[in-house]
Image (cartoon, rainbow, N blue to C red):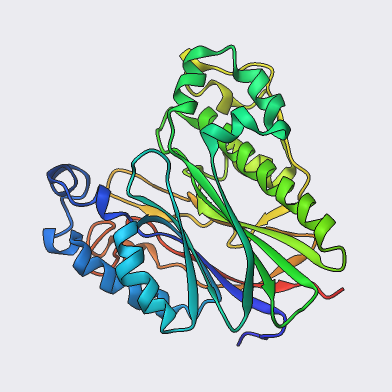
Length: 332
């Protein structure tokens, strides 16, 4: 039972964009074990909507959201349940992105922001040390700047706790297997951007406590540099991530950030489960100084995940599993 004056339920979920699901390659190579009808968005979105409704959440962060699914399904369905949603499109011409929904009787949105990571690293002064360290590596720079990755920040004022403001970050980092270095740089950009937003808000709201939550599909397991950066505050230059692609190896770059973060759902065995790959890639990071985990919604068993070979399936609408946690404001 949630204690509504202090706790809120947060969901992070990569719902598998139709853009990447509706192709012969997906049906025959990526997910041949899933019946074609169960890959259709009209089938999958019914499962997604039912699942989201069942979580009884207060904040929902989604990745791989088709704009048409946001406009014509998610928004109207979740608005009927008391949510307000915002959509943040990826860069370039990609017709999918991020969304954040919040329950309007729990929170009031007092602002929101989005960055295209490839632009931010070239223009934001607080990211200049990272840019200066990689600018001379042409292949790395070209690959990093070609990414359409974005991050969003939805700024929510708690209606139950007038002194509390949440910066709810959301992102979906680059997926390629030889790109740990790209993801680590992207992860550094995102957290430093959120830190900058935090500093600006602290000047504006001197009587409020402001906390960060960062949701997303980070395409990074718990041994990654991103997990170290977020949970320890440092990603030293000696990490193997920097050499994940020898032709784009990064030298003499260390990252740091000043927010003590924890993973609200810990490090489950799987948050992504396909026939060819399965691991923990999705997280809800939270500000440990101001917030604490009350409980975690249990994950499906391995037997459930394997019941129809892998995900997606006739009962699981995505290749990812939602991560869901009840988070509590620490009493001051």
